[in-house]
Length: 482
Image (cartoon, rainbow, N blue to C red; front, side, top):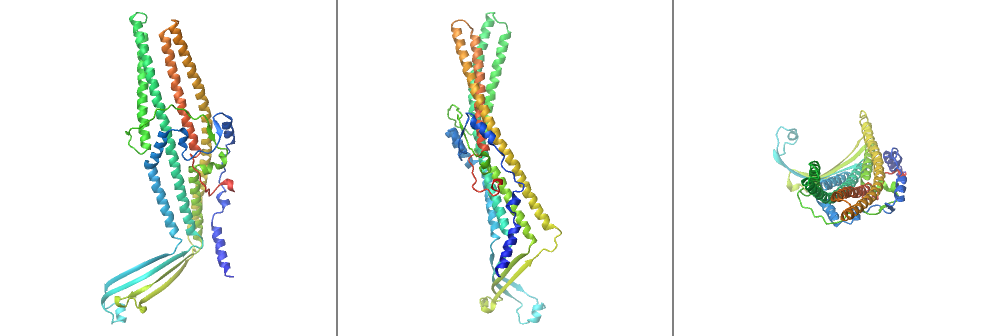
C-alpha cells in the first residue's frame, strides 16, 4: 500500500492544472476563408500552391532587395533589442527551472571576537579564553518538494513567455522585411514617376514656346501663354515633389537597414514586372494559426498564463521543505578537522495556509482573469488576421484587373499619339494636338506606375497576412485539436 500516498499526490497535482477543456472554453476557432479562397483561385491572378517561403521576398527576383533585407536582419536596432529580450526570457526560464533542483552551498568563515568575562557563556565556562578565532566550514542543503507542481508550472510559464518572445521576434522580422520591400518598390515607382514628370515638363515647355511664337505672330493673345506658363510651373512642382519623396523614401530604407539616413543606395535599372500569378495555399483557415507569428506569440502567452493559474492553485496546499547542514566548527584551526569538531543537522518544515483572508483565492482569480484576457485578445487577433487575408486577396484581384485595364488605356493613348503624328505630317493637325496627346499619354503612364506599385504593395500585404514563411510545429492550445 506504499504506492497509495504517491498516487494520491499525483492525482491531486493533476487536478491543480488547467485542463484542455478549461483552456479552450473561450477559445475561438479559425474563421472560414473558403469563399475568399475560391474567388481567388477562380480568378487568373492566383494559382493553387504552397504557403510563402521563409525568404518570400525572392519571389520578386530582385538581388538588391534580398541583400537589403539580409542586411536589415543583422543591423536593425529593433531586432537587436528583441534578441536581448529573448535572452532575458531564456535566462528567466533557466532561473525558474533552478527552483526544481536542490541547492547546495559551501560556507567558510573565520571570525575573531573579544568576549566579556561577564557573558553567560563565561560564567558557565570560566576556562574559555576571552578572545579568539572561530573557524566554521560547512555545506548547507535545501530542497523544496514540488508535490503540487507549483515550481514546475512556473517553469512552464517562463518557457511559454520565452516562446512568445521568439514568435514576436519572427513577427518583427516579418514587419521589417515587408516594410523594406514596400519602401523599395515605392522608391522604384517614384524614380519612374520622376522621369515621367520630367517628360511632362519638357512637353509643357515646348507648348509654352509655341504659344509665345503664336503670340509674336499675333495669332494668340496673352492668355494662352499665361496658361502655358502656369502648366510649366505646375510640372516643376510635381518634379520637385518627386525629388522630396525620393529623399524621404531613401531615408526610410536606410533607417530600416540600421544605417544613417544620408547613406547612398544602389539601385539596379530594372523594369517593374509584378508576378503574373501568385500561389495560394489551400488550407488557409486550418493552418493560419501555425503560420502567423503574431498569433503564435499570443497563444503562447495565454499558455504561460494557464501555467501561472495552476501554480497559484498550489498555494492552497502545504509547502514542504527540507534543510540540512554538515561540516566542521572549532575555536582553533588545529582541531578543526577532528571528528569531535563535526556538526550536522537537518530541518524538515511544512507550512499549511489556514487563514489568508482570501489572498490565495484572489491570486488564482487574478491569474485566471489574465488568462481569459489573453484568450479574448487572441480571438480578436484571429479575426483580424482572417480579415487581413481576405482583404489582401480581394485587393490583389482588384488592382491586377485595374492594372490590366490601365495598360490597355496606355496602349490606346499611344496609338492616338501615333495617329496624330501622322496627321501632323499630312498637315491635317497641329503641333498642339501632338503635345496634348503626349501629355495625356504621360498622365496615363503615371497612373499605370501607381497601379504597378499597388500590385507590389498588395502582394506584399498578402505575404505578410499569410505569415511570410513562418511555421510553428508546436501549437499548445488550438480549437481544431479539441
